[in-house]
Image 1 (cartoon, rainbow, N blue to C red):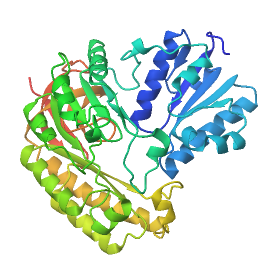
Image 2: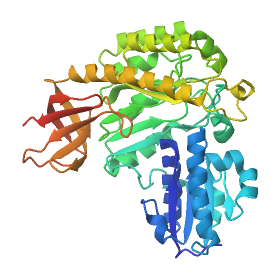
Image 3: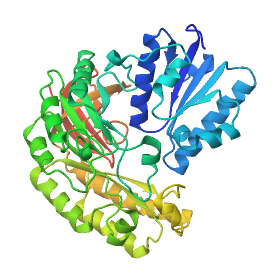
Length: 435
């Protein structure tokens, strides 16, 4: 057992869902009087290091393994008292990793928080809901509404690492939102592997619209943002709620992955090109002016040049406001692993570059159309003579930013400002404060 006077560093890799897990772990440790830090560089002076890993795709796995090996060497040299590893990579490859990296003192899966706490003689406390220290800026936070995924997409290993979809109780989510707002949070970003599945396991109905209406009643909460809404069997009522509730950002993250019918079928996406096109049309109709964000996956086994051209033409037609692209990673344990990984890595990267080059052109045209408009901007940070913020169309880390000239005006970070847009680039807007 560890003494509670040791310095503990918590290193987090991967997505926002991992961030939330680390925040909850940190809250539990601090409640047990463990001195824990999530700050960059904290591991240099730590006695104990906990690494929260990502195991989603090859690049993420490599980063996780490299990080573990770095600290395993320090553990071997006696510069660390203990080294613990948790998260998706540990969940997925625990037994192999135990054999390969014996310097790690213990490996934990994605659902073993109490077991980690036992190493520090700390007892898990339910009442700490919403008390987590934030890895984000203090005025926004990620709010996880469910864990796991019950889909069977051929390329995805998340169900192996996170288990089946498990919705949280509405009252627990609301309680956490209230506590976050009490601490100064103005924007929450709802996350899970699949938002639109929310409630089916617990309430036997798709309860996301109901949850959103109740979150919109939380006093002091100004923006609610939706991430990762699966396009198949999409609950159309959600669009009505978004249109009616001004606190819900006109922003929808809809990971489509592809548009070619043959690729969608091999991906086991449980949707069709026709369904996707109808959904996008309905979103544009119900939420005019909203930002539609998506991600695509190129280089999937069997993807042809014709499939790529079909995808590019679809992007030209829809003109997504926000778009990201990944190259296919051949992951053992997935249904796609039985297929031949027949697209060379260089060709995968070339296809991804073609997608992003097209999106850069579209993004520039959309941004240039904002010049001369007045926009409401949430100020995140300041840099030299600029405030840097976001509109309601932009999520932190992944989307556009607005650079606002200070011009001698003092504003509070975490507050809102009316900004006149004066210039635009592919992924940034520039403007002046309207007084």
